[in-house]
Amino acid sequence: MSHQNIEIKSRFKQIDIIRKILKERNAIFKGIDHQVDTYFNCPNGRLKLREGNIEHNLIYYNREDKVGPKESIITIYYPTSNSTLKEILTNSLGILVVVKKKREIYFIDNIKFHIDAVDRLGSFIEIEAIDTTGTIGRDKLLSQCEEYLKIFEIHPKDLISFSYSDMILDLEWENLGIVK
Image (cartoon, rainbow, N blue to C red; front, top):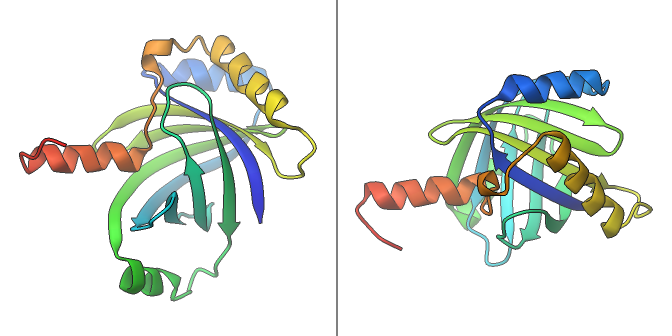
């Protein structure tokens, strides 16, 4: 299953403010997911297996690294929890990096909000405007993301251009004393 997605990721230390705003707007709280995202070596885009107690899926996406709203087409596969998929992907492609996080998941209509505590990286908020039916369109998705940037009072300096996987890889390179 593929769908269009516009996403914004930001550092944000005052998570209670985000929770309060989401509650005031009657967001649906899906729960707290302890997720392990295993990224595999992939010649194009990103391929990750997400293992969590709420979300458990294989996700492929290609997205440019830029500050602000980022567009991608995402393809998702929903394996069974006892699948040998991870073993197959590890043996065939090799693991690039592993990201561990605690994620609070909220929804307002087609907009998904993540409040993330990422091991080694800190606290983040993600806003994802999702079009699973192909009826919303890029302009509306972009408008929705920009609206919540204003509502949450997220400053441009706090926006993140890279994925968590890139940020962890940078840390690992630094720990090895290698400058990219």
